[in-house]
Length: 290
Ligand SMILES: O=c1ccn([C@@H]2O[C@H](COP(=O)(O)O)[C@@H](O)[C@H]2O)c(=O)[nH]1
Image 1 (cartoon, rainbow, N blue to C red):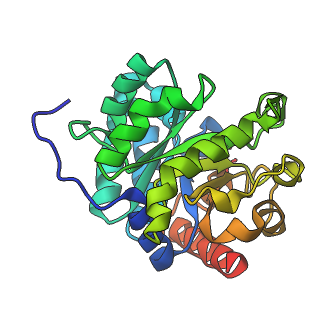
Image 2: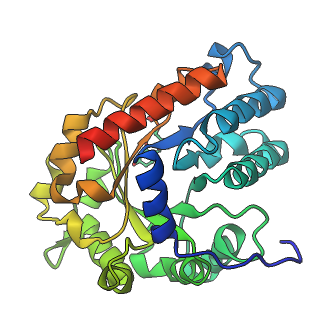
């Protein structure tokens, strides 16, 4: 926490729509996997992490609408890794790129309030524009983060249908005929209602993997109801394609942020080549999702 509160920007959903219109829908991941770092000719240590991350910032900053660093890969290196992450967040923002921190936080409300302060509040050390949240203590347990995000022009992405094969065992379960994923759609739609009424993209997003096959249809979900952005991991390294995006998201395609990390990062270490891969991917996705 620092002494200086930052000014409240426009709502995250509004800023995200502007960024998607300017740069296309790709959400480029920064996931410094050991194998990737080493394939770039770097050592898998704090110096390697710093060089890898700086190349990503150089490549994506100002050229991609939104970037998603995966917190876990920075946490591996303790406080030094967190410092690299914080520097990357600040530098990407100074270059005009939005940052979604993939941290998947979720806890009882009183602890959630501390996570909200850490990531989304006006005194956060390096506040990303949005953070991923895990709602498996119940959607309403996220309330402190939803409220702090809304008050500070920031956003959240709540896990609904994740891209991993284990997700359905929890997310497809039904209670009173509403699936767990359906309750996330309902919760996000409620949060976004005012923004939607104002003709804007809401700031409460969901995570729906591009790999989920027919789950959206099978569960009777209408993702257009969400009214907020839909982060779609699974494109590229996890095997999902543009056709999968079309099948999964249907009428909601215009709100989809396809996320790709390893496939784009494989174009490194040269920042120019990395940027070219990211911008080409984003252009291709824009044409497909139109
Ligand atoms: O359902 C989910 C939620 C988050 N992720 C994260 O997205 C990236 C995907 O990386 P790729 O290299 O493009 O497969 C990674 O950070 C995951 O933790 C996800 O894959 N699925």
